[in-house]
Image 1 (cartoon, rainbow, N blue to C red):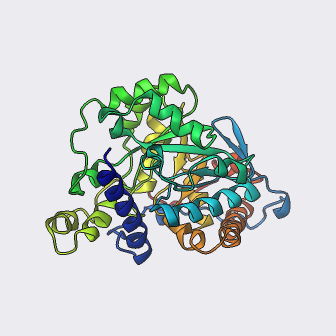
Image 2 (cartoon, rainbow, N blue to C red):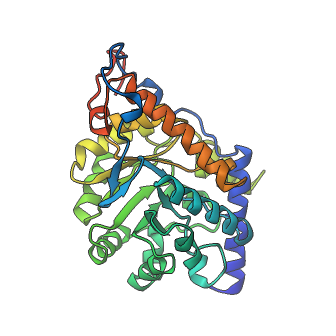
Length: 347
């Protein structure tokens, strides 16, 4: 990557944050999670304060089933965001997935270095690279460097074909990406996560990823940020914006994607993200098969403010999730995953 290319990439990543904050990525439709309705238990026979919200991801224990999903930006802002998120993850005992490390591998300071692990010595941290980069020159060396530079416990490869195809400078040739994922999975047994970026993953694709040997899948379904619209917003009045507009409602809703992936790849750990608005949505995602629930845009305002704001944000989500457990008579997340649903729930 030339210095010019790197600077352009940094500017693009920073613009992404601005457009997410402005709401430019809000697409049509919803996550589908609002259609999941629990049967209310009026006689719970459990202690609200004793409800166990702990779980594991990639064999690592978590105090609560939350993943701070991948966020990025230009170096100045990304460094502050990553520091706050790492500190919050450490305090809360939850997982943190960093934004794409493509820029960081080139040596630019984006808060993606040893300082991240110092701020979160006990947290589950996941490195992150674009899957398509592994047919564009990246290999196992880059994967290992991404993990080692932040002391990560695992690696995410993200899938974003919709975004790349709309992006004027995007990568449109995806031939060989599946084989590349399989090669990385062999090099990181039990530590590779594959995620979408807002358009969901189908059951059939989940089966293919399971055959590749991935340990976990993050569905990142439709209902949250639409990255085609974000790229369109970068080209206001241009062709990219016009092309993206037709795809404002594109993708599998998060609820549908969770159901499909849970059925198609039962041996793979499942992360539910994409339009998670609150702790009740988290409870719904867990009921549909998610082990852990991820949130990115929903916590961005807090991440731009302070570590304390991030901690408080997830404290509210945890309280809402605990209340959902209490009102379904679920003493732990395993019980919540089996909680009765109302007849009108559409899955």
